[in-house]
Length: 425
View: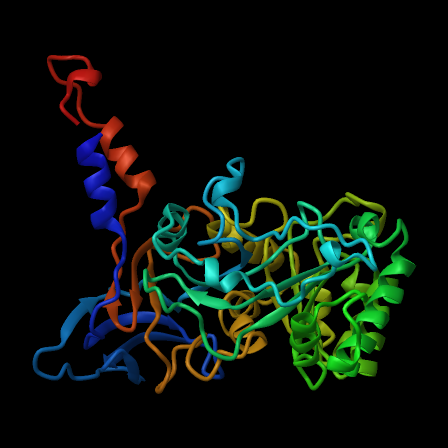
């Protein structure tokens, strides 16, 4: 056991100085305007991509990796998760993404808290991070939730890097999270109409600022926090029903919000409205059969139909998104199998979420000037039997060990003369 724990500590990817690197003869999926480039080299210097092209010469002292035609992609987006703020789902002391407070109006103890920011609880040494990082996930967005009660205005979260650094938050990515629809009705008096009534009240309080007393929905800090989003701030709306999505777009337009739709089971039904509002959709491409009355229009063609309409599409999982963030590649593969172009499927895991959350100036594509967060794959990255052979952050190789690989190696060792319990490991 001691050896296992020591190995796990060593396996954590800790930030180090950016490295110079030449990846030679790769199939480079840029996730940008150049598309896929075969037999192409990528030169990284100072942790940044400097050149992309064939036959590049390695400067002195640069590490050379022979890709031998294998696919190279930007690091993947893990979706909206609790990576680093949720360790063991059934152990409340390790779950920090929910503020368990009632949303009962006009009670000082039960006011809404949009100022709740999960970023400060992020733990870069979480075992769950390593499990997903070795499968190509390099960044995620921390998502507060309302699963333990509280308000359907869940709070704020940001995009974070998963390379082991403590200062992992990516600037400019902070977002406000709002859960709407039938699932949030118990937090709004049993009616989705109540959600819009309460949201309008909260907006009015935020605009009034300090002039509002302390007996409303928001605290003074909450009014200040919410007011920051009323001039083009990014608000992530968890919503599925087509009628509710249209209401979100109207609400966002009225109050100057920048909406992002998450879930969007029926988003394809209002694709033209989403396109007109320039509202991206992060969806679960496995949603097919109607699981709720809000998702009667679910279809495996959701992503393809939205893409054809010109809507920016990304992916995130429903359910246990934190511990299974690595499975987000399967969502892209299923969407591609149901009509989404392959390049759009990869972009939905890289360039699109980087753009949606305001970090595309440095991440999400393989182009000169981009930070070298890269993944070398054994085969097609959208196939479930493909593995990440190496992940790089800022051009430095991340450890490809995790708790799972340590357990695998411990219990799959060749049998000796003594039972496994006496193996000394």
